Image (cartoon, rainbow, N blue to C red; front, side):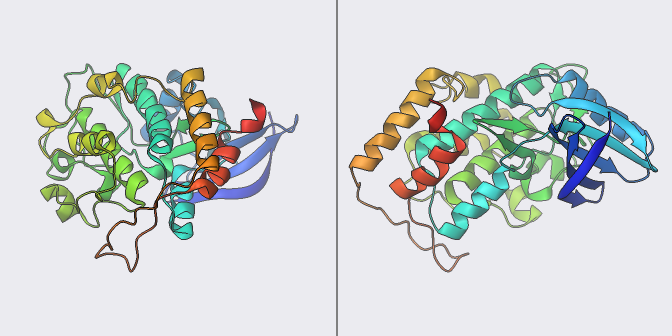
Amino acid sequence: MSYTKHKLLGAGSFGSVYLVTSNSEQKYAMKEIKGGLLDASSLKEIDFLRRLRHPLIVSYVESFQSHGKLCIVMEYCNWGDLSQVIAWKRSSKTLFHDYQILAFFSQIAVAVEYIHSQNVIHRDLKPMNVFLHSNRIKIGDFGVARQLSSRADFAYTVIGTPIYMSPEVLNRAPYTSKTDMWSLGVMLYEMITLKSPFINFVEVIQAKFDPLPLWVGEKLKYLVLSMLQKDPEKRLSMPTLISKSCLSVTILSDAAITKIRDNYIKDLHSTPPVKRPPPSPRTPSSPRPPGPSNLMNLLMDFFSFSNF
């Protein structure tokens, strides 16, 4: 199949990702890897993409070599990634509602649970690798993922993005899939506050972060603190996380979608008192809790209520 490039979606040390179309005008994301060689790392990423088939994971299409570059063609996620949504919320100085965060996070958790069920650790879970497509979130970028021989196996390589890495990884200690649980905790904290809990690896190693604002609900607070445990043995496990009542029903179900829609309608007809969080020492001003206008922007677009 031949492809036509349209625009650059992202770039890094590995190469670049482009929006492309096929002869049938179908849109895809194509990752071009520098060097064009099928080395062990590239073969591993292709293998993971082929094997990890799930509605909440970016789908693999094909791979080939062209003009000295290795090209991996994948599903195109039309709403960008979660980091872009967080940046947009930060610029508008508004926060997500609890149920919006749970809708996002429940899907991420379901996808990661499937990854772990295949004895794979992602090792680079962060908002930039959580993509948005129609009314679903999809996990992508398995470039540094690791296959374990069993759920009890350990990995040792220090790899990933430092402020999303777990303390045991940065300490060069053996680690398991619990390292991904730490990364999920960092992402959840960031979705709530619109900033990372850590600014450097020293804070990560010490598990030192600012307390969550007082207005954060108990469910979200419990989830964050249970995942950002320095000791992996005390950290929330994936089976326990999935079984929690607030995550047991995901956005893929009619019940969850109905709840979000009902909450949206309720917000339109009532204006709850706005509780402003105290100023953060790291930012000149803190975003205000979200109001109906943010639901209009985010939910009406992202969850496509016109399709209901």
